[in-house]
Every structure is written in structure tokens, then in C-alpha cells.
Image (cartoon, rainbow, N blue to C red):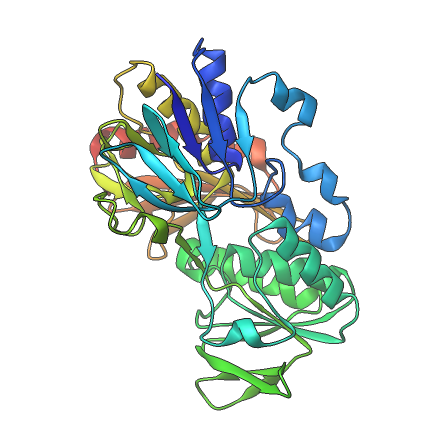
Length: 389
């Protein structure tokens, strides 16, 4: 059975590597929209943007290592359509690639303001090229506004502040990541940013961008206030990259809809940020946007392709590094959860927080205590066997 993997980032590469480890010896083709060899995305908003890493350090594998996979990598050629019945993917350059099985791993596309593409000084951050272009602009600017108070926006704000740029973080939440962390931890994160010089303009939605002569000059809030900026970073979320699948016959709803085996149709699977699958033990449709899930789901789908008929039921996990804070989250955090500090202390900025909802522990968060947070994963067993909180 030949296989075509559409997407050459962590999830796509992870699928290929897992298949080879498990003994799959048939032909594999990997189609990538970007010209680069597979690279890691989490360092883009941190080490690459700040200049700590050269771009080459983000490569997941060397060219020599990739050659041992005996897979054909077709890079710089985005997929534009899929014929599910024929198992054929058509590409921007005019290729028609047919295989017995297809794995969709096309990830996300950043959300944007209408008309921002034509403005100088406005950036998104999803790709390596995005990170390098943003870094170049930040090095020559005096003040930047980051639009987005989630994980990506706060990481970019932290990196830019570390570069000596005056940073304003704008978003509708009362504190950074309030919708994920709740008030106890998000207020601490707000203090962390302000203590490093980041100006927070939160609690008001962003209405649009102001420009002059084709270049951005500020960010306009719904209150009418304009935040001046030489550079604006738009980081208020991303959407699954599924436009190329419209009309394919696959179910698309906040991602590629899959069953509990991550199967979207006979012979078609989805992995990583683009996959929305049925988590059997939680009894919910779930889509996870993080590096850990990309790797774990890729390995699971490789097993399913080879006949291992098991549902994919991970414990959700993600991490973020901002300034001197390393935050690790296991399970699911609800903003309205009851939060208890079970190790360490908020004052020392080194603690483990336990999140309870309806009497059930749904998640744990470690702030500069990654090992201690990981050791509390067994507390989440009630969620995994007891159904949706």
C-alpha cells in the first residue's frame, strides 16, 4: 500500500518515521507547502525570534537523516484539492499525486485582519520565513503592538521585550491567557509581563489597523483608542488549513472531522493541528494545537494504518516559555475551575496548581515545576475514565 502524507512539518514527518519504525516498507511521498526541510515550530516565537538560535537549529532532521526514511519529499508545492474516491491530491504546480492511503497533516493558517496583507509592518507568525521577517522588522523599530493575548501573542511579546523593543500587548481578555488559566495564574502572568516592561492594553477588542502611505501606524481598539506602532504582530489565533479540502467530500468543521481512530474517510487519516477527532473516553470532538500532540497522534495513526485498531485517547498537554517562566499544562484547564496551589507558592513563582471542576481534577499546571506537574498526571485519571467534566 503506497502512502501520501500531505504536510511536511512535525505531524507529517512523525507519521513517516513511526511507519518506518513499525516496519512499513512501501512507497511514501511527503508533500510540503513550504520549501524548507521539516522544522520545529515552537522555537519560532522564542529562540528564532529573539536571535538565540540560527534558523538551521529548527530543522527536525538533517537531510542525511531524512534520506534514511526512503521517502520522497516534494517541497514548496501546496496541495490545492483532494479527490477522496481516487485518493488523488492535486498541487499548485499541477502535479496529480495518487496513493492507496492519504494522511492529512496541513496544520493551521494564521487569522488576519481584512486588508492587512497590503500593509508594510504587519506580521503574522506561523512559518520560519514569518519569524525571520518579523525579527528583521523588530530590530529596526522602536515600538510594536502584539494583537493577541493567547499563547502565541504572549510568547511574541516576551521575545520582543527581550530584544529591547517597547511592546504593547492588546486583546479582549482581562489578563493574558485568562480563558485558559483562569484569574489566579493569568493575573500572575500579567504581572510577569509588566515587570519586564510590556504594556498591557487588555479588556478591549481590537477593531482594526490604522495606516498611512501603505504602512501600519497603529492599532485601533473598539473604544476608539489608537495604540501607535511601527510594527504590528497579528496573533489572535489560527484556523485549520482545510480550504484545499472544500468539495472533497470530507467533513470539515473546525478541522478535518475524524472518528476515534483519526480516520476521515476510508484510506484517509488526519493528524496534528488540522485533525478534529472523537476522543472516546472524554466523549467529545477534540482538536489540539500543540507540538506534543502532533508527535503522539502521528505515532498512533501510523499504528492504525498498519492494523492496530485502537482509539486515540491522549491526556492533553502543552507548554509555554515566557521570560523566566516555564509553564507546563497537563489535562484541561477551565477558566471557571477551582484552583488550588498544591506545591510551591505563587509568591516564589514556582508552584503546581490543581484545577477542579464539579469536584473532578481536570488539569494541573506547573510554573517552573515541570517534573512535579508531570508526576501529578495520575490525578487526571478521573477525567479519563469518568467522561466529560
